Image (cartoon, rainbow, N blue to C red; front, side, top):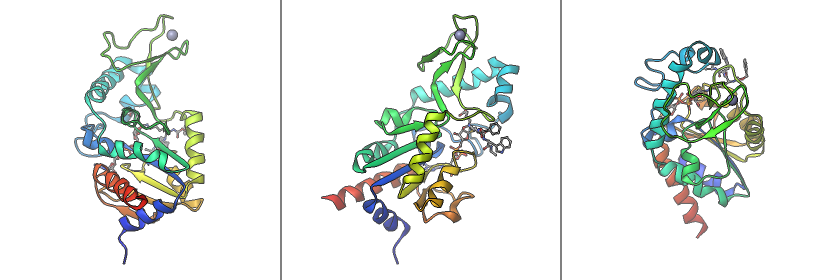
Length: 246
Ligand code: BJW
Ligand code: ZN
């Protein structure tokens, strides 16, 4: 009887189209807290107080204080072996895409280029009045940061009730639909439409594997699960692929 890991390696080895959905768990070993655990990011914050457009309209300074702390965390963090393994995988397939829900920028810093950020980026702020966008994780002197047009910047993050960036979403949806193997890495798969990518992939015939120490509400729909931290399982997968190609 083959293990789920052996079946994963076999499926990925045969595939030429692979897509990956990542969530906060892949950055756990980089020291960035996940959302939905005791001591996680939402602890001490009600979601509606910090991650909705209504919260920003009501109290922009409070929302910015939450994001400034996150920006400092992201600036200090480094990509871990899970991010690096995905970056190294991207040229091994004729089609490959990482669609991340993370806003920490660690996939890009690990070298991923076949990447879309579904929920925006901590490293970008934009002015809703004049659409100016500014990049950078430098500490901000004034919160909320003022824009030259007289408006104020907001984090370029997708909050609850907001639409995902159209280009990123359609690339992710197409990659999920076309994939032969779809990996769901480090996400509780609670937040839609991102979690729905795994369902789109499964409905389109992909073998969907989960890499997550814990089961999620979608686990039973998947072809298999690797119950290990991403920073262990992804380098192990890459190692097995390299071994089989030499
Ligand atoms: C490890 C590990 C290790 C640990 N290795 N794994 C009812 C009311 C209101 C809205 C809705 C509703 N029903 C549906 C909606 C829509 C809503 C939604 O899905 N809500 C659900 C919560 C029910 N979605 C939206 O609003 C989206 N927009 C939308 O739908 O637009 C259309 C629309 C418009 C208007 C009206 C209606 C529809 C937008 C969603 C944007 C979410 N953004 C956030 C916050 C961003 C701000 C920020 O980052 O500050 O993005 S939510 C938060 O959750 C963040 C994350 O990207 C996202 C996903 O979390 P993730 O990554 O899964 O983290 P965790 O913590 O949940 O899980 C971590 C996992 O890692 C765990 O499983 C661990 O086991 C695992 N793990 N260590 C591997 N080492
Ligand atoms: Zn402006």
